[in-house]
Structure formats: structure tokens, C-alpha cells
Image (tube, rainbow, N blue to C red):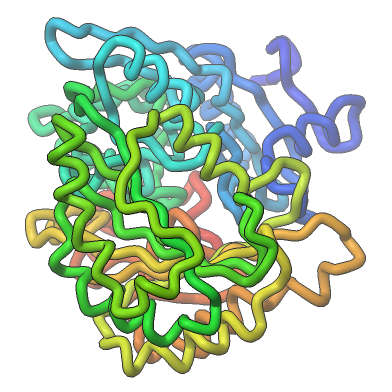
Amino acid sequence: MVLTSLEKTYFRGAPGYEAARRATVWNGLLPERFPDVIMQAHDTADVVTALRYARENGHKVGVRSGGHSWAANHLRDGGLLLDVSRLDHCRVDAGRMTAEVGPGKSASGFATELDAQGLFFPSGHCEGIGLGGFLLQGGYGWNSPAIGMACESVLGLDVVTADGEQIYCDPEHHPDLYWAARGAGTGFFGVVTSFKLRIHQRPAVVGTCLYMYPIELADEVYTWGRDISAEVDPRVELQILATLANPAGVNQPTITIASPVFAQSDEEAAKALALLGTCPVADKAMVNLPYMPTTLANWYTAVMTNYPEGHRYIADNMFTSAPAAELLPGIRRIIETMPPHPSHFIFTGWNSSPDRADKVYGLEDEIYMALYTVWQDPADDDRYRDWAASNMAAMSHLATGIALADENLGRREARFITEPNMARLAKVRATYDPDGRFHSWMGRR
């Protein structure tokens, strides 16, 4: 079987190959990894053809939907890279409160389209993320503390398996593969061509608080934030962000608490946010705004000030249940060594759920901490490359694991799935991909 009959197939060394490789990575830091062939699928038939070609030619397969993986997990040396970003269909059935969407559909685009119809889905916080990668790795999105991880709203999936077979997975059909698809991330051993999703009614009100503190108050702010994290209303996302220059115009090192709230009225929203105004040093805040209404579109705009296009990115993260006293030394080091804005540190209260423990995604804890190194000049690569990984490694004795969304497994090994779920996942992989056709996570065979 040959792929040359397909419209968009690029072999290494041929015209168009490097542009196609570059286009699969959103990060300006393009890894020096080169697949033998890149195929841009336009429909399910293309996916079937590509997988059969890979099997007949002994190729390993990587899959790309949105390309927002910080480490470009999909981009590997050798084998076939299957780009499914053009599978971006979207059909919403408001009567049944379901949607059929392709893996290449932008999660932010999906969210704003639903918003216009009075509907809602816990899509990712950054613009441009493909639903494929977002949903497969679990999907912490808008209002997830209240309505759950996005993967919990996946009702079923159309999947093409390693041998090119098309199957549908849900709790009654191939339930083991359905289980694996909700959290395995880049370790998933199939190509999703369509998701069936449960959609939700849009909350009547979207709002936020806004508090900005001088970085010198880090001990007080993070101690308070850790202490109240378990008490935060589930309609609120506790978000504490530290950066050396805030894009809102505060040109000095700042700790910002800007926490989304989703409620049925302004009064409900303000009440849900009230706890975030109780910091012991609130009287020293440079900005003190307990509540204001906003929109999902405005939230996306605000978030993306920290993730400008054309920049180079490295991320790392950890889950923890450690108390503030144990976390503070590491937090101080993060702040002391932080590269210039837009690099930043996010400290998030996490609404972990025992109901998710049996899911392949089932690894989470009370606090989530993530570091994002962001720079533009390649001359600074050596200067900034190790900031995220070195700081997370220094705090690894306090970590219970990491989340796949912001991982850097190729640089730093860490636990991201519970041992029982990893063992179960290996058995499912042996059934559906016995020859190991699909690449696993970075840093693992």
C-alpha cells in the first residue's frame, strides 16, 4: 500500500515536509524530531488508510489533533505522524444535550459556539487547543470543579484501531477501550475520529474576583491560599498566579488571584467568591475587586496574555497534599528564579473526587502547581530551559503525581497514573495494540 495517492502526504526530505512538520507544533520551541512520513487526514477513510500503511511498513504512529502539547508528544523520530486536525466537524443536538465533534475541533471555538446558544462544555482554558488531545488526557476546563473533568462528559467515541478497524466505544461497546480513552492521553492506542459529548446548560453568570499582591507577600498569600483551598465553593476555581510583570499594567512582580466563578446570579457569584477576600494581608493588595461580571470570551482573552503565539514554552507540574509550611521553601525558590513575564507560576485549588479514582485519569490531589517558562529569543534557550523541571524536581518529594496536560515526561520522569490503573491500561493495550503500533508517552517505550 502507498500513501502517495492521498492529497496531503509528506515524506521526509520531500518538498512541503518541513512546513507540515512545523505546522503540527504550536510551541515556538520545535523539537529536533523527524517522522519518516506525515499524513494529514481529511476523513475517517484517510485514518484507516494511514494505519494500514503503518502496519504494512512497520511504522510506529504518533497522532496530532491541536498541537498544543508543550513537549510536542506527537512528534517522534521515525514512523508515521498522523495529523487529524482537519477532522473538525461539530454537530450539536440541543434537544438531547449532546454533540458530535471531531478531534481537530478547537475546544475554545466549541465553547464559544455553545455559549452563543446558552449551552456549555468544560473546555480548556487556552485558545486553540484541539478537543482530541484535551479530552484524551482528562480535560480540566472551565467550571470543572462543579461539573467534572471534560472526559467525564464523553459519552462515546468512534475509534480506528491499530489494524485499521473502525469501532464505536461506550460503556456497553468495548467498555475497556472507552475506559482507556478517558485519561490515557498520548498513551492512548487508537485514533479517535469523533467524540459524542454530553453538553450542559450555560450558567447564567460568569464572573471573577481580582486581587493583586506585591510578590513580597508570597508567604502570607500562599499560606492562606493553601489553608482555604478545601473550603472554596465548587463553582469557583481558585487560581493564584505569580509573574514578574503583570500584563494588566502592573509592571512589577505580582501575585494575582483572578478566579472564575459560574453561578445563576450576580448575588450567588459574589457570595461564592467571598472567601477569596479573606486573605490576612488583603489591606495591602494593590488591586482589591471582590467581584465583577465578565464573559467567557473575555476570560479567554485574559488567559492568552500569558501564552502569546510565536514564543518558546516549557511546562512542568505537580499534584500535592503537602501543607503550606512544607511548600513554601519551594515556592520561594520558584519566585526567586522565575524568568521574565510571560513566564509564570500557577497555584490551583483542585476539587479531587474519589469517584474518579477508578478512571484511568484517576490521579489528582488537593493542590495543583504548574510552571510555564515562556521566552522568545532562541539565544535564551540554555538560560531558561531548566527552570520548570529543576524546580518541580526539587519539590518532587512533596508530589503525589503530575497531570498529563502540562507534563514534560521526556525531560523529567514522574508518576501520572495510579499503579492499578497503569496495570489495567497495559492489559487493554495488549488487546487493542498488541504490536505496540502507537507511540506511548514521552520517556516510555
